[in-house]
Length: 535
Image 1 (cartoon, helix red, strand yellow):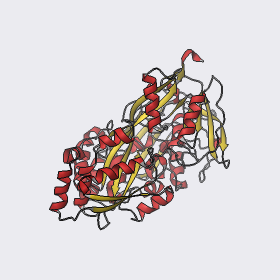
Image 2: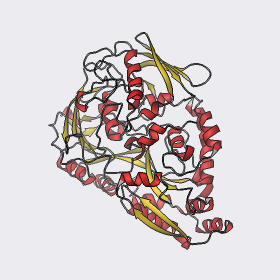
Image 3: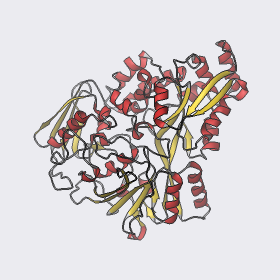
Image 4: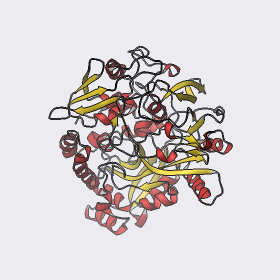
């Protein structure tokens, strides 16, 4: 399989940085929220660029999913996209190389311009032409060409089989832009954006250096003809650079609800207070699709030994990590594909079970590895700060088999360069999938060393199993192939899946509908949120 170099190079928050409470940027003090008529949501997933051709982080996609349409979209609690701007879409031919969509009739952008097949073609070709280093162009790299047939027919010609194309088109990478508004060769300013989604962007208040959004005001798009039924007419998004600042704004009533941005112990305390009747806040808990892994540099003299990696896998105690460090705001995961996504299994538990020092010792002894194994463990961002790595150190040092030195690289860009250059032996990184398909947790992280640059590749996976899975338009039918892949990964341990985050959305008691939009799709649907009593 051809690895998406553009996508791996971007490594945006949407693609890789789920485990940071500081997001992808920094803002100063945020402005006050609007009055009771607007619902205001707070997040630490700060962002810079909103143009779909250059936006590739969770803070931008949060807004774009609600203000732009794509051909397809994810319904609640489903990993299978369904038509959105399209009336229907399907693969034609024997393999997944030709994809045909028919648009709904009467589609319009919020400015009243008609949305036609020409706009779809323009949007895809524009993103590929601009090829923004920080954008989502890598998600479209299997598209060889796209053509419009009349106003309602769109045909995608793929360079190779790619059954995940519908999933990719259901993300903001497939957002449809107005060809009369968006320039073909450069990004459009944030305050000029025009989409056809349920909401339109009314205004953006920038913070800090004047380039980073601090508040985005959206209102119902009167020209929207899609399936979403809006339960509010106005929705604001406010960005914070610190989780404690967000919690303070929630306490003061400056925001009505938060996304999954609160510090783990804070979220757990809010939940406890809610259960004890001590707060007017409510917490909605649900599945999340972002995962966290301990990654090994397989080119290193020490961690290049598979026995060392297997012994480490035998020593990890995910349940204790989830309970004692993350206050049960995460759940243990034993495969690369998280629970809730088709293709999930328990390959690491099947191979290693619970923590077992005796088994780890036997693995090292059989390979004639001298103990204690000296190992450096590096981290940069974590919702639990240094407590996560310290717990991993404690677990790995059980029985005296490892001697671990923890290193903190505060500079995120330096951290990424460090693992790319093979500077670290072991490092802890989070992954926030672009779309809820098993392939998005496998190919980008395993094929040819993957985004983590662990240096490991298995031809059985990269040359046979992944390409085979991408020919399966029925994604459920591909699950056995992904099971095989995960079994091979568990045997070789280029990385150890640790946990997947739970989603903890905190809201005022007057806010309803949050439970309708917290699921593994990663899509937060503004239109589901309402204020009780209509206030």
